[in-house]
Structures are given as structure tokens and as C-alpha cells.
Length: 262
Image 1 (cartoon, rainbow, N blue to C red):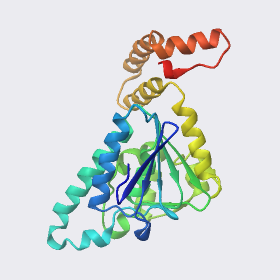
Image 2 (spheres, one colour):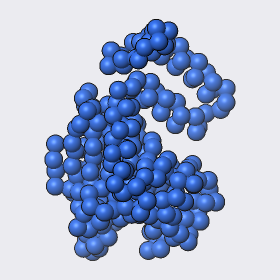
Image 3 (cartoon, rainbow, N blue to C red):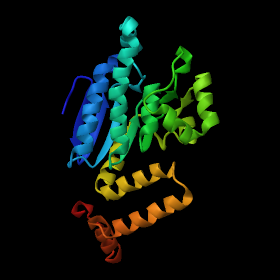
Image 4 (cartoon, rainbow, N blue to C red):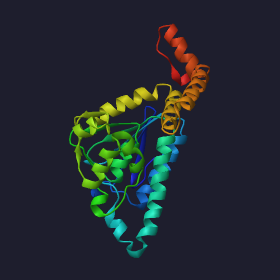
């Protein structure tokens, strides 16, 4: 599936989503936000796609919102941004809530909503040249794209506010140390390493991954006892599922599990 602003290719059960406006640093305008939502729906619904990777065309991941296109709206900028964020936020919600691994391959600058999108990924790899900056407060704006939700949970409140207030940028090594990304890769190996991981996960217990993700996110608003109850019920349910039965049998029989049976 191809669009003008966002591309989707499928390889070995991995959906590869590419932000495709390299001439403007993959800046997010209304059209890109719409296309990203459409692709998020397709990725979440497709039985062929069992893991999703998101990256940027060219040498940047995304510089965030396309401010030039926003400014052209003049007095209608507020209404325009409500439309952009409606599509963008629905796309992010779908990617986060889908019961499939969602992996970022950050091939360059991730700023503003681009950095927020990285924070929303289940896991993220970055090239050695990648840079991360929230950028919003510098121009008198506040975060979107889930940045205010995920960033404090990843780095802590004080560090999150530091990144916002000071517009401090992080290089790939610092972003890894702060927990924003999982690994740093060379420019040449980033895509290969992320796709290898994604293909491995695509062959794994997709439903278990999805339920694990749901369990983890719910833990942020549960008490210890209510979370323990959820763990108990879900573990019992998974053990009797096709995936669970196959996984247990494979372990006992000392063979590799085939989760496509699940």
C-alpha cells in the first residue's frame, strides 16, 4: 500500500511504515496525519501484519509538525490544528493499543511530535546520528502526539520538564541512557537490526505480546492488588489458549514453538 506522505510495505509479516516527506524533514501536516491514521487502522486490522516498524524517509525521522503549513492557515490555525491532532492522535492510539509489537527505527532527528511518536513505540532503535528534542516550549507551544503522557513515564517528571522548559536536545547515547530508546545502531545497520527483531517477534506469540502490552499499560492506573488479580486471570487464560498450549508443549518437547498455530 502506498500513499504520498506515508508508505506501507509488508515483508515477512512485518508492516514497515515510512513517513515520506523527506523534503521537509518528514514534517507532519494534515495529509500525513490522515494517511498515518489510515495506515494505523490497516496495520491493526491486518492478519498478515504481526509486527509494525515505523521510520522516516531520508536522513530524518520527523521534525514534528509542519509549522509552515500550519502558519498558512492564518486565523484558522486553531481549527486546523484540531484536525491535524485528531488524525495524528487516533493513529498513535491505534498503534499503541494494537496487540502487535510497535517498533521505532529512528534514522535521524526526532523533534516535537516526532519525538512524541518515538516515546509511544513499544521499543525503539536509533542511529548514532539521531537527535531528540521536544521543541514545543521554545516556540510557545505545548506537546502533542502523546508526549505529555509517555515522556514523564519514561524519564520521570523532573527530567521531562527539563526537556520541555530548556529545549535541551539529547543525542542517541543520552536518549538510550534515559530510556527513550532501547539501542543505538550504526547508520548502516539500523534498518537491518530493527527488521531482524521485528521478523523474530512476528514469528512469536502475537496474542501474548498484545495482552502483555495491555497488562503493562493498565498497571499505571491500578493498585498492586488489582494488578495481581489481572495477572492471575490473564495468565490462566493464556495457558489454555492455543498459543499457550503450543508454547508449553514446545518447551516440554524441547523444540521450537510454532506460534502461527496460535
